[in-house]
Length: 476
Image (cartoon, rainbow, N blue to C red; front, side, top):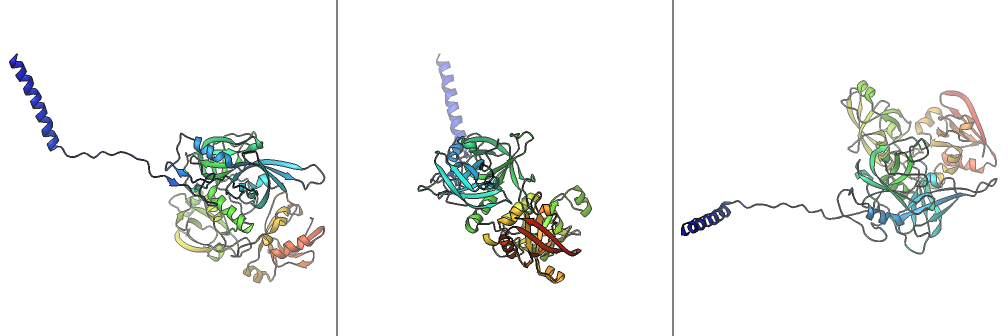
């Protein structure tokens, strides 16, 4: 028995000695553990960074794919219903249309779609708590399908902070929030399906379509509502769906918030959008263009027309040039370039890298407005609502055109299909020299003369490449 006890004692002692020696010679270990990053503060480009007056902190660096509750609760109070009423149709009862809007500041500014309010002259807004207001129209921009309204209230409004639409990733969760038909707030979820989409739904020459595509369900009445990330930040304004049935089929589109921010700040400060124009028509580079010009890859945009007197023309850009980067940023698509230009103002200078005949070249382009000027436009001289209602866009003649043609006047840039001007058979390129026999040397004079006409308007002018004078008449 003593023999077995001695064996057991020696075994235990040996084990203890082994542990002591191992601990003595073992190198120290480093234990690594993960900890979430410090929360980042959400920012607002229009007002201060808060939801319902409180600062909002991002609890994660990228959008969480599992929890929409906090975002939905934060966004619901800032979504409004808009009832647009047209009382101008004297020969019939008033016409109503409805949509959604988003409160974006504590003093009652609301962003929505232009197509929600464009046919109205009175705008009734219902808030989340069922309180009702009559809103004033601050401004609208058909080129981006955006509009800005404002309600007057004795209390501060809840509002939504702006996110950064450039930081959105395809596959990221987003929520579409609207208030259709005054049914209270509705929330649907989906992912970002694509960015920089164009679907050719906006009318006019200088339209900007670079939509965020999502599969979050958006139905009629949700237009003008919010597209938000799961942190409750505004990343887009829901605008359109593609459908064959009139109902949601999986394709929804929103104006990116970075473009929204620029447009509504211009509408707030100037009444119109201060839009800097490059002055080109462009298409995506495709396989045939790649092969024709010996490109290494399909990238950039191809210029198929340069507008005379534009910033692009003065910088030396030509047809068949291929634009590759702008301000050091690679041009990935025509819609993304249009969106980038849409963020600029007249007088901005852009550095453009382009290819011509296989050579890489650089140009600095001074952006101009639609009147070929670098000045900021005002509401009174911005082609005016009368020109949009009549259905055409105008621009000033360049100095070169005035000298070459020995004429003063205003050129027709584009004509809207189905408009009163289109019914006169006028073509773009027509140079207006007189309105009702009175000389018109600039856009402001054309607008004033049309406004002064009592009933019938006669436009007289020429086409550069056709002889003789041309006349187009219409009734106001």
